[in-house]
Amino acid sequence: MADRTQRIQSIIAKNVTEIIQFELKNPRIGFCTVSEVWVSSDFSYARVYVSFLGAKYPKQNLEELNKTRGYVRSSLAKKLDIRKTPEISFYLDETYEKANRLDEVLKKEQEDLDKILK
Image (cartoon, rainbow, N blue to C red):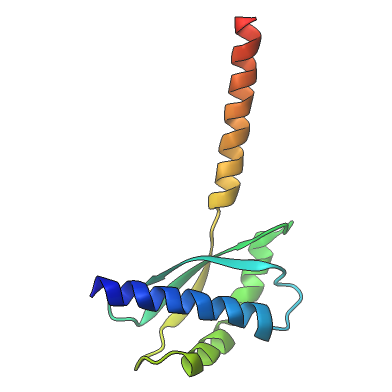
């Protein structure tokens, strides 16, 4: 069962990426990447984690993307070969930003340590 779930998650991620890049015509969404998809055990809900590279206001981009959920789901239904197309919810993946903040803190601590040891 886990193999099927993982396979469905990867298929949904691939197709949603293609739908966002090639079918959506909303310029307010910007450059969006799908980083992860989580699907419920009965395939009725899907959480799609996205990130917006270079966006000043990623939460506004996410709101615009969430407005297109119906279109994305209907387009996904045409591409999937499963009985029930899941309800899609988009979530902001902040992993990249958190990693950058962590790197900045570590660099600052290393610089402070270097100053003390000199």
